[in-house]
Length: 108
Image (cartoon, rainbow, N blue to C red; front, side, top):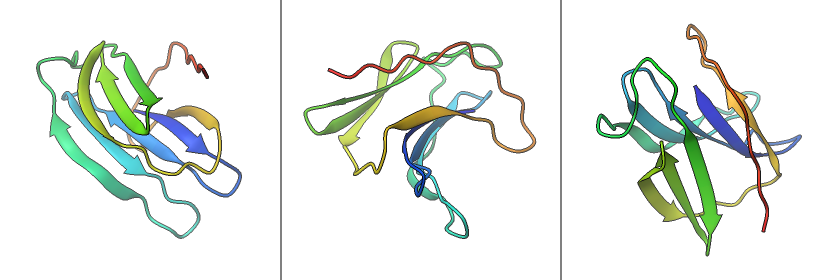
């Protein structure tokens, strides 16, 4: 399941994924015939993720950087990429089951 952000009517934005095995990844989502691009490949995070249960994903953009968190613990930081929009939401990959409780978006 993934947290989508930065999308617009012409761009699907980015997705911060986590799976039931505790792996996370970050993708530039494709649109139409353009495939998704891996930014952070699947990375095991057995220390901070809860496998087969609820996880809290957070992505902050501060000072030109993106910082990703799983259950309140930072798992990556990188230079922010260009976003074409402010749309956000969730993505469940084909062949999987995902549940979302809520989404909070803040702008400062």
